[in-house]
Image (cartoon, rainbow, N blue to C red; front, side, top):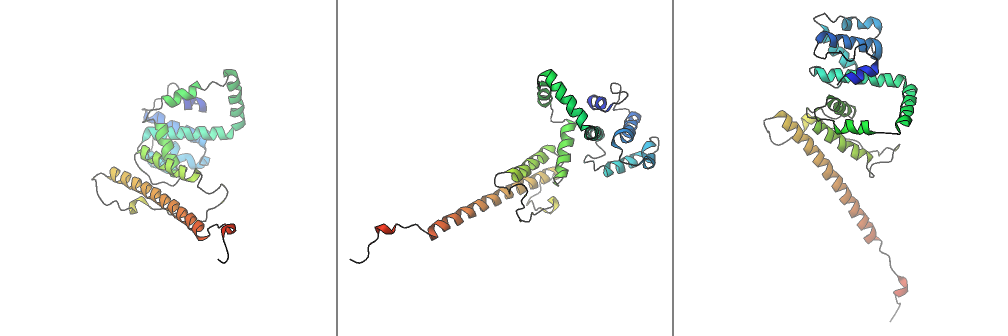
Length: 246
């Protein structure tokens, strides 16, 4: 599953790369930093380059923290996939005109065929590391609380985006002036204990989403009451039907 990204990055051995070979994995991390990512200055890469050192994992952990990698270091495959995807994004950003012109040329040659994209979406599995890493990264960018289940995170992301892009939300470029309340998940009172921390966190997220919907409903009810009061407080009358005297 890494072959396509390795080919895109110009790796010297995309076909023979063995993700289960620890030495090859470490060498790939060093190659990505030296050739593509280049987060550190050359003299700052010494610990990362020393792949035989017993403290290499500590150096890798610091490197991932400096990159703001959202994936836990214990998830080896997902970490490696995230690094490759990050390198691809940087490579594209540096050569955006080149890749855009190539893409337009290919699209004309293929008649705008999108079957490859459709196939990749159809064949996307629920355990796909790209999907998990993408959801985790997106939730972190949106400052959402972490949750081990990427489906729960995806639901939270969807609700947040719907709230931001709905017709009732403020127009782009304008601030609503309302203070946004950010409630840490660990401060939410659930009212019961399922005995499973993952289930408890999921229930807390669902409860917060439900409270948000209730708050939106109450706001709309209040707006309707105000609109009705405005009509009843200033009724329209037809003076031509009135009479003075008997």
